[in-house]
Image (cartoon, rainbow, N blue to C red; front, side):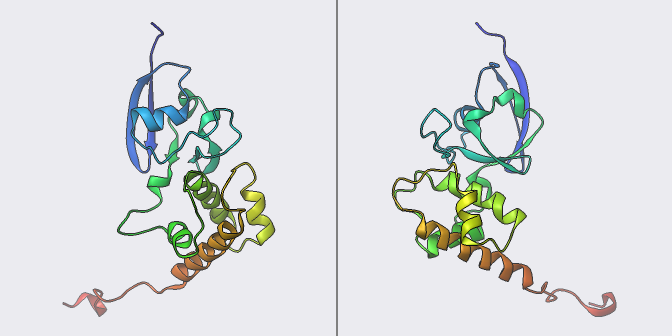
Amino acid sequence: MAKKYPVRLKVNGKDKSAEIEPRLLLVHLLRDEFDFTGTHIGCDTSQCGACTVSLDGKAVKSCTVLAVQADGSEVTTVEGLGTREELHPIQQGFWERHGLQCGFCTPGVMMAVNNLLQENLEPTESEIREALDGVICRCTGYQFIVEAVQHASELIRKQQRQPVSTENVTAGGDV
C-alpha cells in the first residue's frame, strides 16, 4: 500500500483536506474525494480541456496537476462560479446566447473564459478564441461560445457600473 500524504486546499471558498496517494491527479481529488463533479474528465491525455479549473487564479488542466502540487492552493471549479439561484455572468451568458450544446466541455470552457475575463473584460473575438485554445468543443464550432463570452463580458461590465444600493443607509447614522 502506498504512503498517503495530507493535502489541504481551499475549493470554491471552502477549506478541504484529504489523505491521498502522491500520484493522485487534482481532477480525481476534486471529483472523487471532494465531489466537485462539474470538473469533467474527457480524454485522459490533457488534450481536451474539459477538466480546466482555476488554480491560484490561473486556468489549468486539472488532469496535468498532481493533487500534492496543489497543496495549500485555492481552486475554483465551475461549481464555484455561481448557483442555480444566482448565475455567474459567464453562466448567464452561456444560457442566454446558447453557448453550449451537449455541455460536456462547458465547465472547462467557462473556467478558461473566467480566467480571460479576469484579465481582460473587453476581449476581441480573436482573444476569446486564443483563450479557448486547448479546450476542445466537438459540437458547436465555437461561434455561439464566442458570442456567449462577449455577452458575459457585457454583463460583467454592466454589473460593475451599477451603483451600490443606499436603501439601508441613513445620513449621519440616524434611524
